[in-house]
Amino acid sequence: MAEISKKLKVSEYLKGWIALRYMRYVVFVFATLFTLTIPWVTVNGSHFFLLSFVDFKLHLFFITFDMQELYLLPFLLMLLFVGVFGVTVLGGRMFCGWFCPQTIFRAAFRDLIETKIFGLRKSIKNKQKEPDYSTTINKIKRVTILVISFVLAGLAAADALWFFIPPEQFFDYAANIGDHPIFMGAWVGITVFLVYDIVFLQENFCVYVCPYSRIQSVLYDDDTIMAIYDNSRGGRIYDDEHNKLVTKQNQLAPDDLCTTCESCVTVCPTHIDIRKGLQLECINCLECVDACTKVMAKFNEPSLVNWSSVREVEKKEGKTRFFRPKIIGYGVVLTAILAILLVMGAEKELMLININKQPRLYNIENAQGKPLVENAYTILIQNTQNEDHQFYIEILNNDKVTVAQPSHPFTVKPGEKIKKTLILSTTEVLADDERKDTILELKARAFAVDAKETISVERDIRFTYPRADILRKKMERN
Image 1 (cartoon, rainbow, N blue to C red):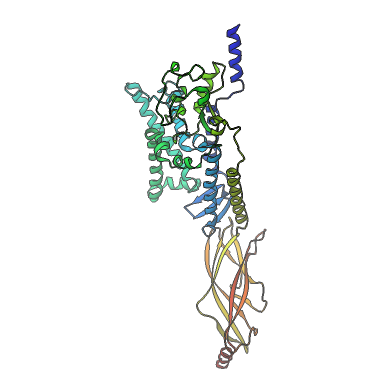
Image 2: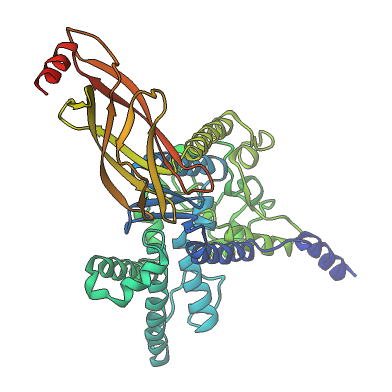
């Protein structure tokens, strides 16, 4: 009866508990499917995110922005970095353990390919011991795994490039590799790096290469959520200098619960001992929490390694404060950046136009006894829509100045930039100044005459009207 009662108690500790490792796998699958499919999803020809190196455009939230509108990019970068910092202050290296491509690739390679498919590792629970490649069969398996790794790395490299080269153009480039050496070099380079990183460098990338681990040390506070070992329950295994104090359970005090089984150590992908305390190498994958939960459940005790904070576990100062000033500050900054990004994105111009005055101030002609004054401008107009449009230009705030050229609407193809000469003219007397030319402020409107929705842009330009004596002399000569 005592044994049955013990099993019932153990089941209560594990009841409703889902291994965090399996939860991570679900996140990994979702993140992988998302990154593989989102480059193919378009709305009216625009992608969710694409910084196109082909036509030099930014696609963001299915809206296309021209290079002249890349003022949005700094706000995207700020949103990314401030967001990562805020998540780190709140939940430690959650991104590393749950969303980082490096972690996903390593889990797929180690847990799925090496362990489940080819059986080179005896168990997922032991990540410390490397596979034995001394036997012939294991050498064959290793070569096979390398071939598979190159194929998967090539796909991952292609997926990375799809955020810079649209998928539909990517395959055109791939079919004509000789004509695109830079593209080929980038694809091969990323593929080789991924194979080296995942197969040979492994978690050393997280420990020695990735700068994020160095950043976290200045962002953590007593309320940051992380994998943390409870010394007060388990017993002190290491001193403050990380020197090991005990190696066997009988070296601990009678009330200390740690069994020194080191399940939390062998399962760690970055090869650390969580019982030492906070370490830069910890990626918050929480596999040590899983391991200790299973072991301590046999003794009717909760896990000695928890996803908690220093305030709650070590200092015993009460519950973790999630809504603290630092987190609220990050939230306010993120909200402000996002609001600015949305407002500026909503103000996207549906066409782009530059109007620059030509060097000659004006031209004077005799039009049936009246002075005809002309000002010439160079316009550069771009159609940012996905279909042909016919554009025209008009003057809004002065009906005495008319558009002499172009006299008819002109067609601009999608993404095309064309240069034209704009000539504004007037036969009216706009000023009578004997001392200097008169500068008139005009508002020009360029618009698509055939668009169902309004596509127009307004620009302020200056019209120079000549001095009265120059105008008079010119007319006398003519």
